[in-house]
Image 1 (cartoon, rainbow, N blue to C red):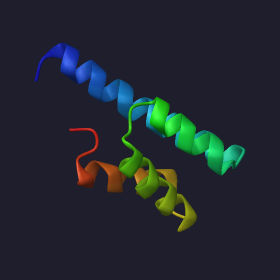
Image 2 (image 1 turned 180 degrees about the horizontal axis):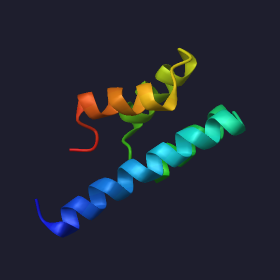
Image 3 (image 1 turned 180 degrees about the vertical axis):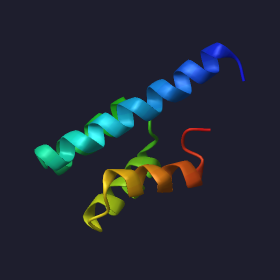
Image 4 (image 1 turned 45 degrees about the vertical axis):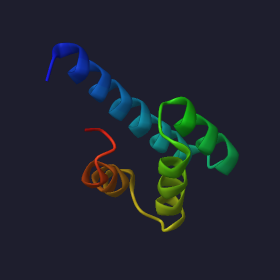
Length: 73
């Protein structure tokens, strides 16, 4: 993996994590969907992530699930 690929991966992962953390401070379903999409997740990935939020999963659990699904690969 090149340095650029590593930076993009880390950057996407970091943006998604910060967005999820923001949701727990100020929950807003519309804003979270728009933010996750703007950060680079596909509409299908956004829907899955929102479903995980509705299941009362923590940010760490959601990030682990997203890693397992290969979103940041």
